[in-house]
Image (tube, rainbow, N blue to C red; front, side, top):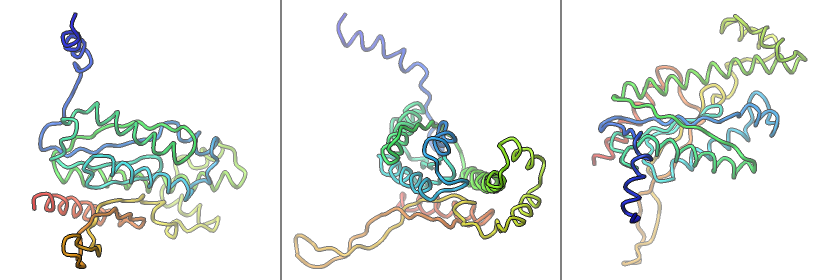
Length: 259
């Protein structure tokens, strides 16, 4: 059998399950660390509940994903996960889901592992969102998840550092309300409201324009060139203000794309 015929025959089995995102839909990729509890607490022994070194690894990995060939409108990272927003005009890989999932998971795994110096793995899933409103809701959801996780983590690790075992600390927190958890931390001298915002609300990354002085190679005169760079926000707004913030980034990106 000739190669072209064999290739055509076998390619069907490889692409039979291909699903493509419909035109006009926003895509959000959520890239999540695999077995990161063991990696961060046992293998690498990062500081609990939060470690600036781990945060910086996640931010650097997110930046690399924004520069690996996709048009990312907005990126967000909290804990061991990264969310990437792609506009409805994204056309890479013909919008095939399996290509996005495999490429983004592989890219994140490679970039994080190189920086950490140890093997680490991520998985990826895609949300298909038909409106800006749902895009805002998605990022508000992850932003609120970060706040809940931060409070629980601070409570849990504060109890652990007081000598409680895993099950004892978990049991102590069972059924407690947000206000009760805040009060418990306060009894140990910790005001949750004063904890750095990046721990409670994650980190946002987005593109900004800036002017860069340069020399025109033809006229040899000074000029100003318009460039893009990644802005990293460690002090994101909260609740409805965060929704307004995300919506403004999406609107600005779409306006710039149409210009």
